[in-house]
Image 1 (cartoon, rainbow over the protein chains, first blue to last red):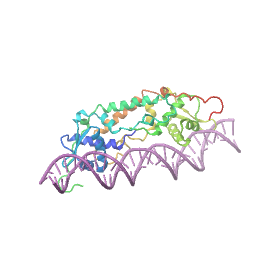
Image 2: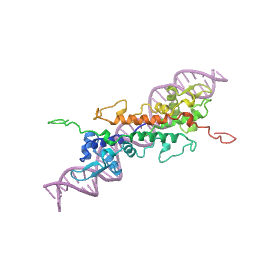
Image 3: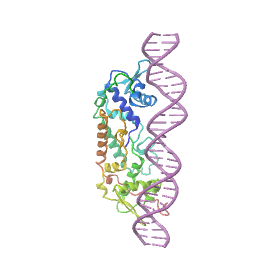
Image 4: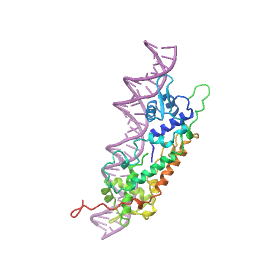
Length: 144
Length: 144
DNA sequence: CGTTAATAGGTATTGTAAATACCCATTCTG
DNA sequence: CAGAATGGGTATTTACAATACCTATTAACG
């Protein structure tokens, strides 16, 4: 049972942005703070933007910020969006394929139910519940 | 959110065995019926055996059979065993690594809770609920 | 109006872990 | 003792997530 690191990082980005909801975060800044490449993070940012979780603005002083108050963004919804296209098992994916036990399989329904329970549990919390305050500045001098 | 195919096949093996709880299944037979290599299936069988879900017997007429009645095997337990070592996100794995937001992260607890909810939902069913009856024999003559 | 800072987005590459295959030892039946 | 079955290590393949790179496009600011 695994979430992709795509989802992992997406959540961290949103956590961080929820910590200072009023300002825009550039992809470069977030990438630096989270320790991954700007390019990769930009991909996640695009996904979140297209899904309507964040808004982005180009140009100088631009960046991304939450599209709605953090208190209105449920974690289950966020995970649903970030894990889009990931099927719990092959049977439940877009190409059900040639499963030998087609109509007789009573497992699929149970897995779907469990997945729903997973997301429902996450929906009990919002982004505001896991917001992350800004990191402590490293004082004057050269930060490593 | 994904289960490994290892888990997927493990579940199907158990479903099939629960359909005829009184007889032993050889790895060759199960592999043939489920359409995967004997070697790979044997690996899964070993894992299930070591975890105590099935018993195995070598030699002629040997094979695997359920260690307990199917009504006493909860699906959550099965998945817990098959997904052993799979962490939902890297943070929750054996090597928590160098997470920048160490003690301040409030996400981990939520994910753990959701994972528990997932497994608890599965625990509402047992193997008996998803048992799979034997496939329809291909008429008289030589069954492949 | 040009320069610069930023996202948009495609494509190509890399890396890793799951999935698979192969081989031989071991054990049990008959 | 022969044959049927699991046990279990190791090696290979393959799929896909993760990463990198490159070039638009867009907006702010002088």
